[in-house]
Length: 163
Length: 209
Image 1 (tube, helix red, strand yellow):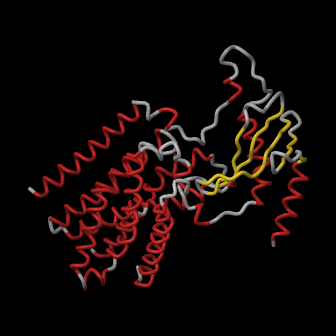
Image 2 (cartoon, rainbow over the protein chains, first blue to last red; image 1 turned 180 degrees about the vertical axis):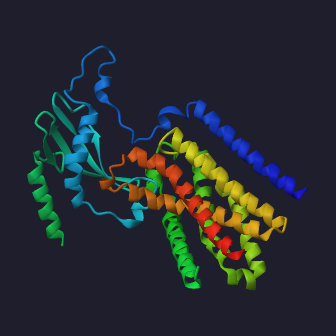
Image 3 (cartoon, rainbow over the protein chains, first blue to last red; image 1 turned 90 degrees about the vertical axis):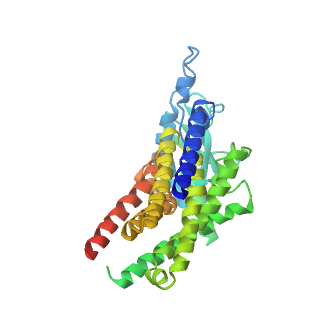
């Protein structure tokens, strides 16, 4: 009797939860809400929806490629992490937000951020000439962009001064 | 396996469990801008999700903290009643709260449908392994009970594996995308534990026969 009650209770709980889950997936809790924020959008294809040509000469995929190969390895050296924060559900590391509004022609504009676990922090702003593959960075919005090599040198000096 | 190695392994597992309990206990400051809640800002006004989250975290901490003591042979032999009381708390917490709320949270998991399926199976397997351990204990099948309890704790320990895998797989040299890390760890974190525990049980019970 006791055993049957346990089985009944647990089965009912599981059925309820499964039913709720299925309802959620089919009733608006699904879709974009469930889509990871880590997924990227190819904005160049968005601009062709109404028949217009892309206003950029590149895709967001190209920006990610440039970021992963040229920017992230250089800039990651200057970031340190709190161990308590990185042991979490979210991947830590450098990431970027492509600014669809600000970008134009061959210039990709956006923000470099650092994920420390699920906590996101601003690192710098970028402007990339995608034709020439030249990167310009600035720490704050009011600053002027500088070549990445100069920015890296400045960051090196800053981190050296810290120690 | 030597006694020293067994106790070292136990100490490592207990330390990891304690560390996980420490980092998740911070959620009970009820600050909604903390760690995992930072990426769940769209859900913090959803009382159903928030209640599930806090129940899952609270009961998960309890499970992680009491679980390792169930595997201490001397404690089990000397204080059988204590073993039974802790065991009852452990299974009641998982079957009644931690696994069902884990299943609820799976439907809101980061990474979309594949993450949802991964975490749902994780919760169901966690529930079943614990339930089968209870059934075996009730039927006085002690060896079977022990095996299912090992599997159950391996599933509980997925919370630790998950939090070790995510930062490890985020190392830029591996070149995994964030999305891939989020989705794949929803599966690997518990499958790897099940594989390891099956191998361990094979060695342990082979040496007993």
